[in-house]
Image 1 (tube, rainbow, N blue to C red):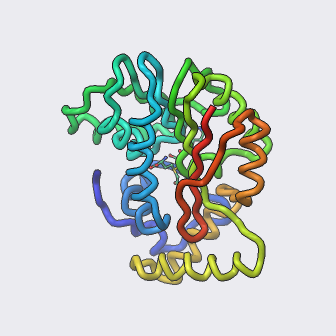
Image 2 (spheres, rainbow, N blue to C red):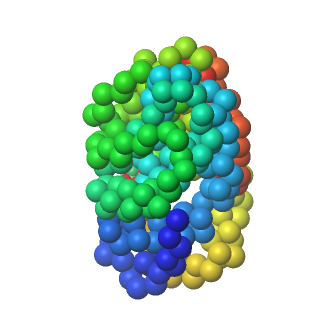
Length: 243
Ligand code: GEK
């Protein structure tokens, strides 16, 4: 992956809610997400292991909101089931273009990858055994989230798995403590107060986190009776939901 440093918020941003997954974000994305999301590398690595365990022959594996394909490539390096293919979906053409470039450098993965430009809220899913929503559902309008999870549940084969990772909100006073520690995490990774404030303003109303209870209840409403956390780091949580 490219490691161009994220300097986007060193100069003032346009305004509240202006964050877009455009060309400028695509250029610095690996550095941005690694420095902003505690536990990101663990979630991506574990996703590959989970995909290896749950992938079923002749099914699709979906990476929804694939960005530059970190989750896709983690799955591709692990899954060996016959006849599987990965469909990596994002609605940012800038992200997908960069993802395709990065993936062409890798020739050793035996599993075919299709990079698809689409809105995941309007996507028709083919039968699949693994679906990932790694840090993506938080960008979907909350009123569309249950419909998306229900369509994922319907497309999964029995025994298939959904992996969901999100920024979460928790009740006070824990929320304030976790927020402070998340800011410390960003500071420790070299972000200035100006950059932190600028990013927060830009992403407000774009990234809408919810509580773990809300996620768990929605997973059950979508049909997943077996849903549990497999990773938790500060205010970020990842779940597996098995059909
Ligand atoms: C990773 N999973 O590296 N349809 C398709 N894509 C969307 C939509 C939508 N409606 N809304 C947002 N996205 C990745 C990281 S990033 C997380 C995921 C972050 C895409 C958006 O374009 C972006 O690429 C991705 O979801 C979210 O594991 O930036 O914090």
